[in-house]
Length: 135
Length: 135
DNA sequence: TAGCGTAATATACAACAGGGAATAACGGAA
DNA sequence: TTCCGTTATTCCCTGTTGTATATTACGCTA
Image 1 (cartoon, rainbow over the protein chains, first blue to last red):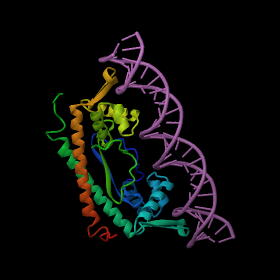
Image 2: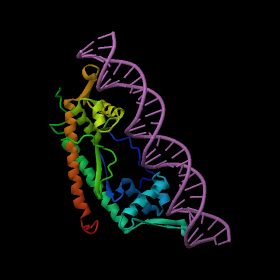
Image 3: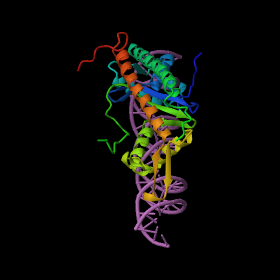
Image 4: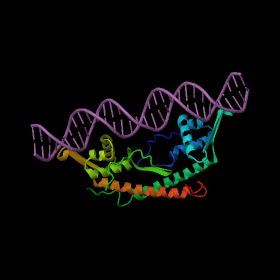
């Protein structure tokens, strides 16, 4: 089962350890990031920017800006939206959008492997941390 | 020659590619990050939080809060400061602080290698992104 | 003792990212 | 035609983060 209405901001739960944030830059700055990719997945799921935004507890305004930013920076649209008509309109993720999702999750997974490795290699090595060595 | 007065914020120069930010969390949140480590190095260089902050175009208040945050989360002080006396006082980086600097730069270097690798492996793979990006 | 430059601390101010709400445009359906 | 829900767009408000500024504490030195 999916976790709906997941709050993305303000996770104060993280304890000590190696942390990081990754994204992919485009011509105007951030092109793909964690929140943007989750947004794409929610749009795919709901067929609506409005519902996708609500499910993430994100304002429509912000969601729309993210979609617009991605579409402007991609060579082909990642999201196609239409206004009016049945159901008032809607939005869907293109094939290019699906590629973006796959690409980012791969990057994301590799990054978490990297963090885990680094924490093992650096945190518990002999020459660093955990020495009684007073001044 | 060192690069002094380097502005750390707002680097809009980055072009397209794989980007990221790393840090090490402690009990209260961020423990070591890029800005904090550079601050430690500047304190080592100038022997003064005030001068270190100025050289980074950072407010003393902010610099002091970062130092305080690191000291509170470390098992041993990373920076020892004294008030009054010759020159009005000063601050210096402890042996533990030096370890923190080394640890973070190693993490940082590894991360940049990782980003470079990922960009090679994911950006120019067959099943993802298209063409070899001519000009 | 007075002077000096620093650490330490509090208050006010500025910038900015994002939320909330309001509104218009749109086009199929009843 | 009227209704409806969504996209698209604008304006205002708020919380957060860091800057600016002012003040006090401090301890060596002259």
